[in-house]
Figure (cartoon, rainbow, N blue to C red):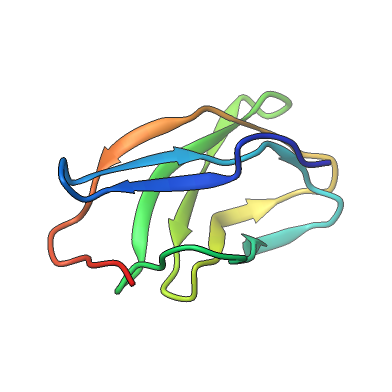
Length: 101
């Protein structure tokens, strides 16, 4: 189940990332899973830690993510079948030394 903006806006002038990904429901038990694959747009020169992007109401905890150099987004840690991940858009600084192509 997907829905939402599905974008990361790179604001290089202000050195900010605006992250707006969709929520989803896990249908399998997985760990450190590449949940979103790159379709188009820029990619970071090195992995970018995005922090906590999803809340999981059933377990009262959140899930963190990494934006990888191939453009994919990996959920850090494990997900259980049936976990519903609710995304909250956020803005964060571009890490030092990261460029985009």
